[in-house]
Image: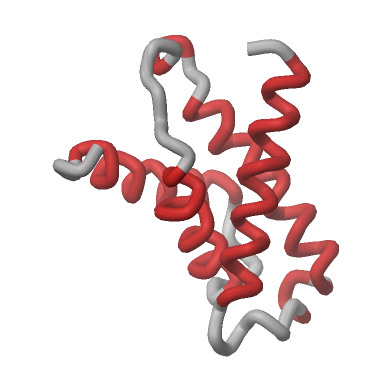
Length: 110
């Protein structure tokens, strides 16, 4: 994957993580644990990069994921993320993504 594509993928994933956080019913206005909105977005960007790398591994090159992946997995992941303790690591977020993704891929509608 070229650098431009990777940057776009990462940006799109980050945007959907943030959109999910904004939808959280109680935490959407409280970003103090993340050092504000900017801190949350910074952390989300680091996590988005790992998720992008996972989705674009060579063994997945021929797989196509519908755009609803962002609405059905990434956005809810952002909502989950904002409700977590800020001591979370990006690897833990990636693990959560992978678990959800694997269930999602096996679901009959995909």
